[in-house]
Image (cartoon, rainbow, N blue to C red; front, side):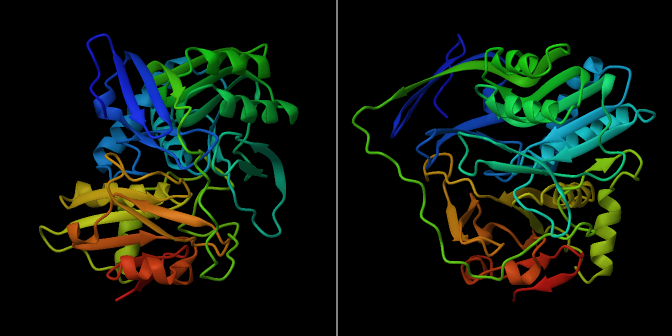
Length: 399
């Protein structure tokens, strides 16, 4: 990241142009770096250092960010039920984490968590769909959730969680879709790790829910300006990759899976120690003393891998968390290493694993709902020693 001056201003020179930032509040060095997207819709990307999506993150740093964000949301909740929502794929885990932290703070409160997804569950109805226009994968689906997940009303609070916001458009799209379903909330809170919208996120949410008290909270707040380079060659999105595995469809309920049908306080809280013990019982050997373990989630499946990584770190094992992603990013100072491979799902799209050198780790634990069938030859060659945990919690070994 380019140096930030004493006035909070920073200038990031990228191939397609220059990103000008001004930080009003928060520590940029602790929260993000800037990289360049391979995306003609938007050339820059805020790469979180605590999210565990493009840069391996320490579980304690990830948890601290979730706890801090939830602490900022908590005093803004109304007296009634709470619905927390996150966005696929990047904010599935942090949305679940904010929900988890809020339920711990308010154990008597009715709360639910629901995420958008890019996968339908065969035989399960779709509730509604929305689009994130600037994204590399614009279409989002929201499935009909489990009972007890969604409660609304004049005393209810809607909490929308994302890793960052620049214009508020993604929040507005989801809020508008919820309003179109007839849902109403007395309070709405937009919660992000970094907020660059200069108040626009909250303003656009007020349009969707005109009678609600709307606020935005974040760990960092600032403004941005993009200055394109008129002479820069256009950047085309990455081409499709031939499918290397069978087409995969998620099941409605599996013990290790993304929470596509929602979580609620009616169900017990998921516990990393219990998940880790279950994996040991399934044949995953505990790490040797001094071993370094990288826990890798896949796409939308990141919440339970984080809980496992956290439990492992709590036992003194050197552990970090990362995830595979659809997000196409150029290599450079922020993305030093980049593995491109055919997706886990048989869709014929490119996926990526960033900033991972297998030689840095003694154990690689890869969590994928698809199981061993979703690990194509490119990924097998790149991670030859990986131990795979599938959606049923079964353990497979590549080597």
